[in-house]
Length: 300
Ligand code: GDP
Ligand code: MG
Ligand code: K
Image (tube, rainbow, N blue to C red; front, side):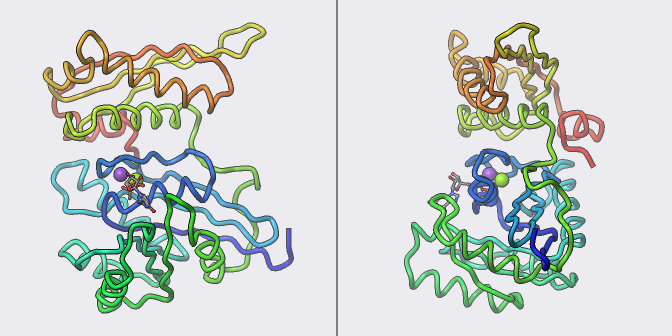
């Protein structure tokens, strides 16, 4: 490690679907945070670590998209975003290239004006941007907030990501690494496995089940023997009987698709064969209860 090694915490804020998880995945180069077209699929406090042994270490706190609270889950996510913002050295505000400033953005700006950490405007999805619109978006957002930098990127294709990383390091203090250089996340295998199943479920279900699913890993065991092999049982929890039907699908087609896609990803993660059994359970109003939020992984 170099003499003036830098290290610090960075958080990404922005509306749902602007590409926060995709950016994390690109920077780390493997799948950690889940991505989905459906907003609010990212749990709080997933720490993702990027290390350049010559330069420094960045610990990203992947926050959920900030939004108006609609129920307990919403409230929790808003307060999680608030608490993250106060603990970081730098904030990235991610926006899409063609964005009109909305009420939510004004709220984010208001929140950011109360913290000391510098804020960087990151324009994502420039692969699908029109230059004029980008210019308009930048000036509209500059009226809201005092940005230290404006950086355009395409998280999906990786354009601008190296520039983004070196710009981030400019704003981090000198200090030792928090994690080993090999570390990419603070999540356990169990948590990542649940995230993978959640992601595959949301992708397969598209918009059919309105964002109310939770994933429970019931058991996860490595089978003794020469060949690496894991047995995993997990339950997809939903709010209504009608949702259960959709998740199972005609003749079990949907749950089979979710299982196949998840198993493929989990096998790569564990570098082993995986025997995955999925169950579906209805639990009404689980998103409203504090206890259930903890059980389903939204812990404080
Ligand atoms: P989050 O809710 O902010 O975490 O957003 P996600 O990372 O889940 O991304 C939402 C959607 O935008 C996904 O379908 C991504 O594939 C897509 N997306 C993310 N970054 C880019 C990008 O740079 N270019 C394009 N074209 N799509 C992107
Ligand atoms: Mg996300
Ligand atoms: K998302």
